[in-house]
Amino acid sequence: MGRYLFVVSKARPELCGYLREHFAEDLEVEVTLDRRQGERRRLARDRRPERRLGHRRWRPENDEALETIGAFLVALEPRETAV
Image 1 (cartoon, rainbow, N blue to C red):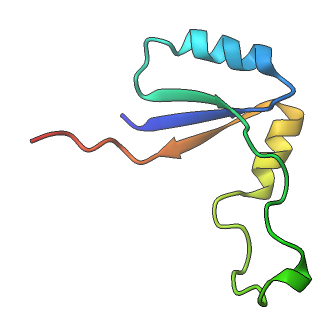
Image 2 (image 1 turned 45 degrees about the horizontal axis):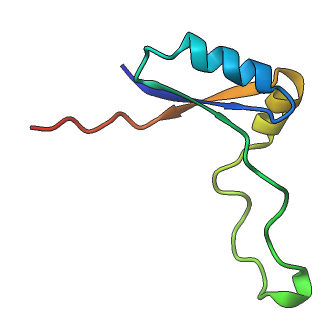
């Protein structure tokens, strides 16, 4: 079975509480509030030209899901099992 992470909008703390309670017994599901606080990059005059093609970890559909649904689900890598 895979591992999953629910990221819940800061505007929906009740949904975060509900999901945490619902998945409390499931060790493969984590629930967290969105901790982003805005753009962290410095102003354009303070940095070298951007080499990256875009955000590496964040997708626009995640923001849309946070606004419309209040959360989104991310599939995580399976945990390594001890041998």
